[in-house]
Image (cartoon, rainbow, N blue to C red):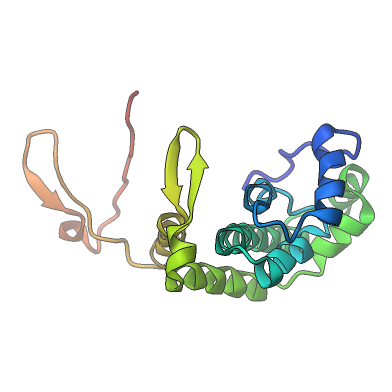
Length: 200
């Protein structure tokens, strides 16, 4: 996460004005799922977790519930990172700067978060999506492609459980520039630099 890369919260944009109406009148509408998906970068809004929990618990549509669950997982994960940063990385001047940009209530809400508890719930929500066939089969637009929430949850869980500092690296098979086949495990115990690249 690139801290400080977000613009300040605004209440005068069309999205902000529509959000007020949707939050007030439409959370139980079965078609609210795409709106939940649109909230996935709204971790600075102190109300967003409650909104997503309401949709997950009470909306009659499994697809809306699924999108709320996945978005809630991501918001909690992002809030965990911010909570940790406010505790360990940011100095008082930086905290004041965030408060001016986003409001004292929003920053106080993030600072109260327990990173370990937030990450635990993030993982539980992803597991819940995979355990529920209807949740997992829910399709969303991702750019020009369509993808299921089950696929996205699997990717995030794989990263969480296997691609973190201190975890053994997953096996990789490939060929070197001379066409000689190798496996990453051939180099166990040695320092390895992996350079992933591509061109489009």
